[in-house]
Length: 212
Image (cartoon, rainbow, N blue to C red; front, side):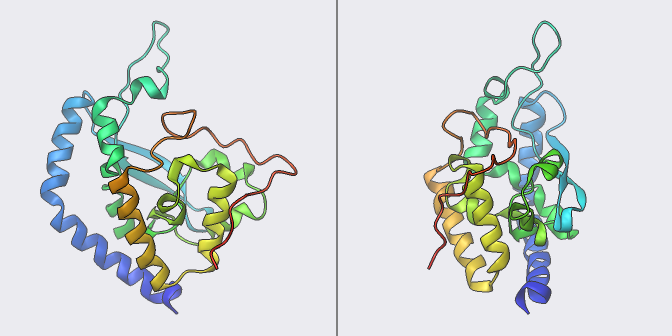
């Protein structure tokens, strides 16, 4: 009942209230983003959502467009400037996604929307992460974020999709706040963001243990 009816209503109300309450902060970040990113402060990209339906995700940009002598974009860790690191550390870059939530593309809580090109790389179990709307934050973001393996992250996503409840969503919000304050899992061990998912090799399984 909660997942089918009340979750969407709660998401709509919270997104609308969030946009109104945070509008001064959003305006400030738009101005600062235009200054520090040298132009457009927004980043938009196609992402798969509920049942793999593609939508346009909107975030604040955290990487500039610096390029090398050949016109190629520099590595992520170079283009992720101090302002971008600040936004990511406090998850402020995610705030424009409140508009995605308002129109129904996303939810407050759910698996993070990843790249469209990952779709054919998921195995059958991992595809179930798209049985629910993607979220502004999710179980994996509150329990490791970019510091856990793709396999563990997807196992958490699928577990969440199968165990949605109001109590679980509330707990994830609390855990997310704790993770943001501690600045946990912002980067992986080998990258400024997260390495690209190339698919799970045969025989490789998640080492994550489901909560009891």
